[in-house]
Image 1 (cartoon, rainbow, N blue to C red):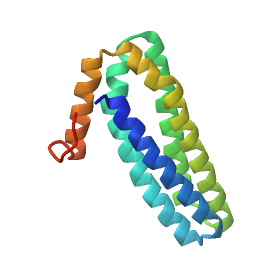
Image 2 (cartoon, rainbow, N blue to C red):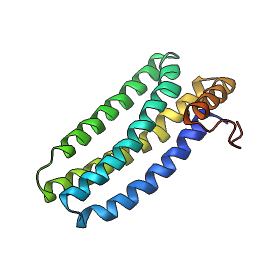
Image 3 (cartoon, helix red, strand yellow):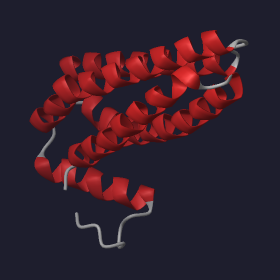
Image 4 (spheres, one colour):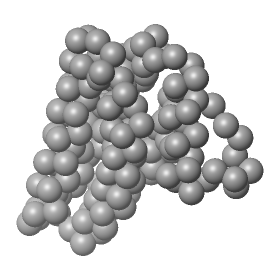
Length: 151
């Protein structure tokens, strides 16, 4: 399968996680919001690292248009990282809850931008065999290759 298919699958999981965390955040204490932040940070950062390696790096070499799209996505990754850092330093529950909900909204906006712009661009710019090989390497990195997951 294509790397795009695997990343879309991760987006589905991340959307569900974000929805659940958004429901918990309004009634959470500061410590609980920080725990939600830590959970989300691990999931998002892991996804972003693999996405960068297995999609953005090969894609940005294909054209100026692709390079600009990847640059925009990396800027959003940086914005998400800054919000994660700000949230780690939040001092009050109200501030932490608000920052968490802003973080969740930005993450969803970012995923949608990838789905609407970057993923179709990748499918247009990269050969299917390349996308499938990137998908295989993604599975290997995730430790899923040979676990009954078919490429």
